[in-house]
Length: 254
Ligand SMILES: C[S@@+](CC[C@H](N)C(=O)[O-])C[C@H]1O[C@@H](n2cnc3c(N)ncnc32)[C@H](O)[C@@H]1O
Figure 1: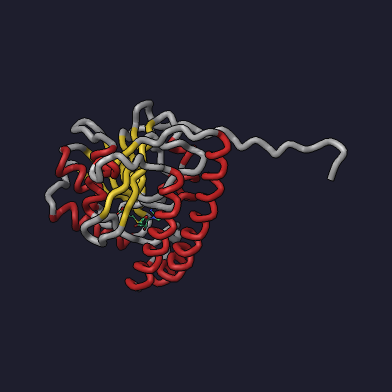
Figure 2: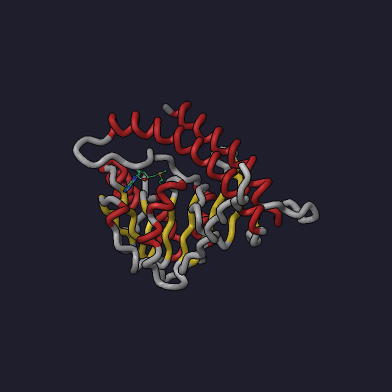
């Protein structure tokens, strides 16, 4: 199973590398250190459409791979509750750190991790920033792992873990939302994310939110898996991309 997950990630990272060069050209003159972090610039209409199409093809391939594994894995893992929409894959610790840094988490913030896995994001937020955090997961095993992690790291006074389906949550109280789901699941969350307070931040490991323009995309390499990862940042209210223009129809010709 571990080998299959590694293969899935290798595919995702390969496809990811192809997209990044096109969607976020990094000026060659930047030093290596700076070239890891940059703000997305508005692309001209035509370029944005081509980019969206390219992203669509690549994301569909990645999602198909995740979905196959998810179905097989969850049949074994989860009895009684609704199946998870994506299998458990942890975010490497330095990517967790970058997500929280990019979201500019403060002590007074309330952080939600939607699909919290072993609770590493909410535990890190509480330990590093002293803020309150809630981790939600639909899989009872992940909830158990998270609760153990919270206890081990002594952050029970700041962190709550709940067994919930993230698509039923009211997110309006959160200041920061962290995600490591799939592009399609990020899109499915949009109606809930639109109820966030102005200025709330959303960060997603590796996956975009189709139709919504990120404020920043940061690339980094993980010391855990030595692979490249991306972190997307959006700020509430979400900046929706313009709908694609339909192709012009020429009169009287085929
Ligand atoms: C890729 S893992 C991410 C774990 C953690 N956030 C991290 O970054 O290390 C996705 C998690 O989402 C959970 N999940 C999938 N569908 C869910 C749903 N509908 N509601 C709540 N959790 C869900 C899975 O059980 C899994 O733990």
